[in-house]
Image (cartoon, rainbow, N blue to C red; front, side, top):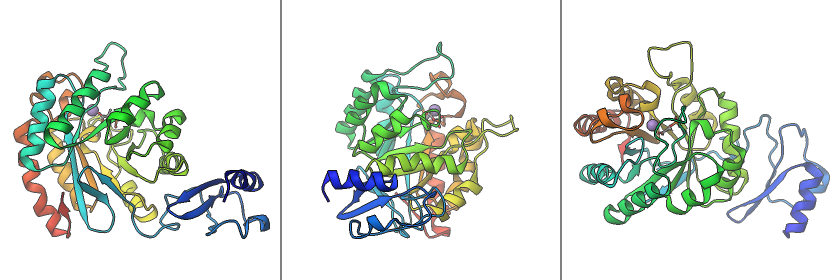
Length: 324
Ligand code: PEP
Ligand code: MN
């Protein structure tokens, strides 16, 4: 189909046209109750969706999408759970190298670390920016790790897309249309975190912005939502995770660190997440959490992380999942 024809068809139905591999797909809003006659003959597949979860829905694609991250696969049908870990923020070469060495020691394939931090206060540490991205790239080269780093807003998105193996869209950026659309055009995997005040519907629709932009590599991350409870930082919505597993075709990972907010609860919570049968885990770990420049209270130290990591395969084997 020519781009002109695609635009013409999109105008007929207010739809988005894209290629999924070799297949032309025209995605319409759930407001459309029937496929318009003019569209037949121009599209390979037609689906009518009864709600606004389209390309990411299990109704559209019954098998779970898989996303290549470095040398491993996240999602798909192989019953694996991928560990992604590292500090909240990249703070110095020494600090991030220490985290990279820990990943290497444990055979973990992906290192996280924020460089553009979306802080609640403008007076807090804002991240090392481009210098941090360069340090992360250095860790990839030196240790063969896939690097996961977040984008705060559209001002530096090109740099993050350039340097990262996985672009993390944080809870606060989940509604940023500039970020979502840029991620849709990118060909790097996107780890989309749920906003802490977002419904599941809003969360999956944010993912639709990326998918409909042509980027199929989207991973959903539940990281806790705000409830009336203040003793823990957020409340991890495991019911929501069950919903996402059932109704979407996207890999789902869990971030117990931000949900709990306190290191003491993270190991138990992580094992509970693992027992749910999820595609991945995102854990914050720091060589010396007491002096961490962001999220100090929730980061595990290296020994705590080793102990936790060592306990996860047993939980995995109880439900037929392998930690990768
Ligand atoms: C983070 O991963 O360090 C982070 C800022 O997370 P969130 O966007 O979930 O708050
Ligand atoms: Mn953090």
